Image 1 (cartoon, helix red, strand yellow):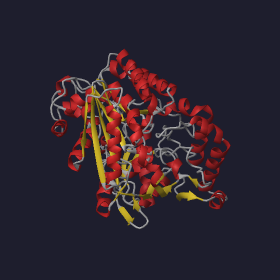
Image 2: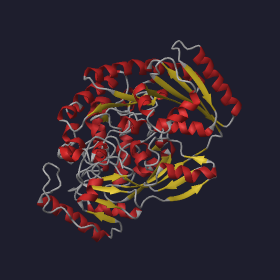
Image 3: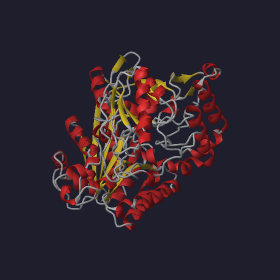
Image 4: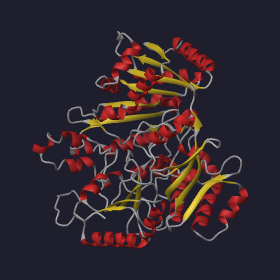
Length: 585
């Protein structure tokens, strides 16, 4: 166990000095952990806690303690140790969340250190069993020699864990064809808020009746979710958008399936650790496609880049990803840019303001070539007049080009003077057909504040990543988070879309009633209350239970920039790289 290095520290508004009562509560929790036989690591040092006080977001929240469960049973032990509800538990994977999903002033359960085993692979069944801390890239590296892969493709694949992907129901590139994480869950073993285990999977009607017939927490949860999805079926159909990117946290739409079966894992996926903790999961995997083909298209207008997505969709591409001129300008400073120049050849005589990567995948090369030819015909006849396009079939060059696209987040995160691209309205999604008009209005909002910004993302499904450039060390720029968030939330709602189209809600839970409506939001609160009556799990996120803890508001959570502002000016230059880091490990 790590020693407590808190006493005697005075750090202004940094929050490093807990009160005597807070220390007492934490000590009681640690004592109960020991009594439960906790086998993992317990860290109370400020340094360890600071590591988990940030993620890939603009927020910073110092936890009371950081623990690393060593065994799956350690998760049960941690839940039982928190049974009195004095402290909340937030499970953490790779720390890639852009909205503070794993940040808490309670206890962080980091599963990435020990709970990272690939437990079983069944090639005949096409399934793999993993613990929540397994990193996506490592899983796919394991599967590749067997000819399989786990399809949800996120740009943070080298850091993102499977547990974190389940928590936000992650998707990424290619979701129009391959769907999202919840589409691949066969079964999940989870810990409920009373410390008991539950395995969830697809249930037939008789199996559901049996699951609802008991007296324990699991049976109550099944009954409540079943009640909501049946009584509110019409409201769910009315409220949930008809989009590839669904209304996550809690996904009421896909629990009761068309064949009459019931799959509560669809609800737990996207619940961001607010209902249960994942111990292990059995995932379906797919055969790797044999062939990949790519078309790179350049445009003199980013708006035309977006409009041409609808032109290209009849060719049925696997993905259409777009980059704007700000991302492209940053990309030219990156070592991977030479791969793009090699593909495109001579420089364009027109300024390139937008670019699309249009990819096709499959096992039949003749079919892929037909799709490519169809796409080229569509581009040739497009009213949006792209500058040029080039087909790429070399797998190494395709991989290099996608690496450049995956670096978009990092490229915008690089400092531009005192400003850098920051995430807080960066994963909105709207129906793809209205994306150009939506982006035009989005730009009007940011232009109205005199901000520069970069845009990139999954245009084929209407999900665009937008990062305004702000200096989060200044109160003036931090004060823009609220009005811009409000304006973008209203804009996405008006266009039939979502404020969180890919990366979950996190500290944006206050916007839930806007998108779910008051009726369904009230049902979310009832579901949370049944699953977690003492609000032990990730308190303040998504929906309040019956314990009386409200959902956090975005201005109620400290910004990382407000802590960095305390650094004396003389030290800011020597530590400029640390300050500009967004906290992403």
